[in-house]
Image 1 (tube, one colour):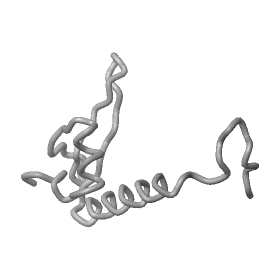
Image 2 (cartoon, helix red, strand yellow):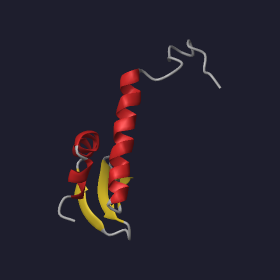
Image 3 (cartoon, helix red, strand yellow):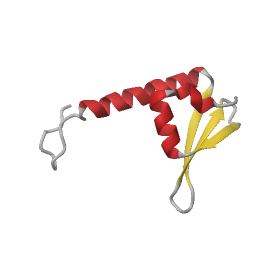
Length: 84
């Protein structure tokens, strides 16, 4: 299925840099999964986002700022594990 190119000004496909960023984040999440870790995203009542690094059993390893998580997923996903 192909989306028309001029649907409210949106391109038919994401720009290459967006596809590359999504691919980098996917690789980062795969790396965390190999370490039996995952990220849990939640919203506080004031609409701020919280991100927790969790072990496979659900134990919270640490909580990290959103900007830190995104930077690390792109560059060094292993650093999200910290002192596991």
